[in-house]
Length: 327
View (cartoon, rainbow, N blue to C red):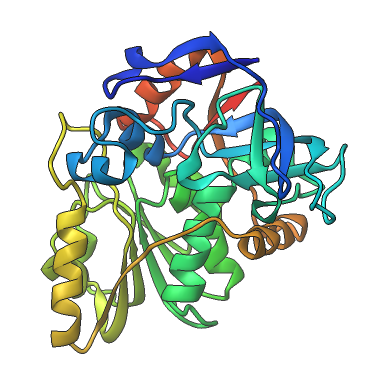
């Protein structure tokens, strides 16, 4: 099968299209023929081994996982001997987590990490949901504890997670303020944002409006500034962010670590978001999608052989919403 392979950390040029063996599912796995895969900021972080501290988990001198990619959608080709809930022919979607491997024609994945594809979404749209959707869902519902009537601000509202977060916050009954650049104002309004702040013209941390939840997906503001946008007892949810800027030792981890240190000392809740692949969360996303409350926005699509160009586009801060690979 064809797959995007990487044997050393570096720029997109380190990614090559190669022939590799089709994987064989273990007893608790399913083999999926990939129809689409989606890019996330995670992918360029893993490709470059950035921040360098993350290499302790990803592989000190080279990536442990040779085939890149987490999010996928496709059809089940075969199942392991212990798998009962999934059958060959099923249309599924999922997130491989740190195992990677989605930028390939076939992938093996634990049966517990796939879910039926939303019936009303294309494979390309479904592939755009898992990691970004679970991040948005956990950040708002599980960590942010968003309830009907809450005022929620999403910093980075036009990105892959942000476009889904705006829709999910509305689905949870919140009044949503979306922060984005001028060219994305109409996009986030079309997704349901009640208020839009164009950061090239206004500073949301200096405005008069206060929010019950601030969901920071960019990491470009200080904790002091972000807290100014909160009510006295509001919640700040920190979820990494940033684009490639030449490499770093700790990257957004420094802001997240400062948040953890400050959290016990202030009335406002400061929470660092961590996510993990989950069938339960995928089922929730599917329910929202099939009910018409959640529709992934796709910026561009690329064929498998052009994954390096797709990642270069993503990491250069030009992409909005999701970038998807088609097979």
